[in-house]
Amino acid sequence: MLPLEGITVVSLEQAVAAPFATRQLADLGARVIKVERPGPGDFARGYDKTVKGMSSHFVWINRSKESLALDLKQEEAKKVLEELLGKADVFIHNLAPGAVDRLGFSAAELKEKYPQLIICSISGYGTFGPYTNKKAYDLLIQCEAGLVSVTGTEETPSKAGISIADIAAGMYTYTGVLTALIARSKTGKGAVIEVSMLEALAEWMGYPLYYSAYGEEEPKRTGASHATIYPYGPFMAGDQKFVFMGIQNEREWVRFCEEVLKNADIATDGRFNNNSNRVANKEALKSIIEDVFRQQEANQIIELLEEAKIANARLNTMKELEDHPQLKARNRWSEVDSPVGPLKALLPPVTSDEFDSVMKPIPEVGEHTEAILKEFGFDPGKMQQFTTIDGAGKTT
Image (cartoon, rainbow, N blue to C red; front, side):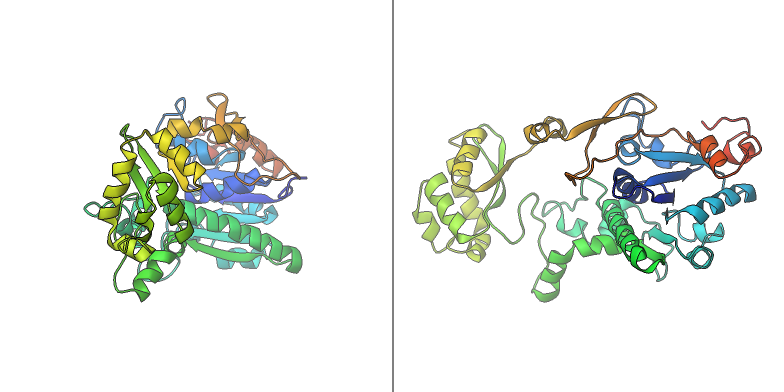
């Protein structure tokens, strides 16, 4: 039996945060009914067309779901959602602030009607406070949470290369729902959960936040290096490729000097004999390290680092990640069906001897509308004007 088999999740979701959370619930066997606008559906479907005509974002986070097209501006369509929520275990939404309340599905109303229901809202800044109605895209939350201030080079602040604020919010939604399901199994009561992107990402900013609050200065932007540990980051090899490495303690530092730099005296040099001194004199140390590294190719240096048990990595491209030997050896690639045919998909990172992950197809907009309507006692023919663009059965 799958861990979440028998759990039904209804989601008014779009973009990344909520779909990322619900896909992980679906991975564990939950039934996820994704309510979309008739026609275009979730606007993330249109972000790009790189996956055989489908959006890379959408393909990533929407497998194993059922798509129900509903025009929730219409009262008859709201009745369908009411019926679904009456039999659901979890309701998740990440529409614009206040949108779900205006539709008549506020947490207070739902809690009274369906005391067993776990209700989760995802927003940029939370349901109250001066920023409640401020637009919240991933980049903007990265800025407000201070991530951009500590990312990039000294001259150029940079955003993370992925939607990290959305992902953080999605992860806390996922774990929050799982926690609420465990609690409900003991009490029989549902819960109201709120996750804000700002608060989720602020939690992840813990180290620089404490460093700044109790230190004399804020962490500096150091590109791919570390603000407070050295050597830690990229170093150029003789073949003009970067080798990434990190020294975490003094034992490693001594080994690195002896076995990689081949100069034990550097370890006891007063400029470099502890981490604080190495950080203060990192430009001089970088020059010493790269003088040695330039005499060898990146692969040779990595072999030396491995032998010395010094943490290291290559700078992989996305194609190299796709072909990563570790992912291949562990059989992490699977396949899911989609409207454009079979697509590669990574298995979820949590594995178990007790169950396999669900890897069902990525849906078309409204693909399951007729079946869901019939299941919940509605006549699809009579509901056509509330589930399609033109009332003629066309959802695209």
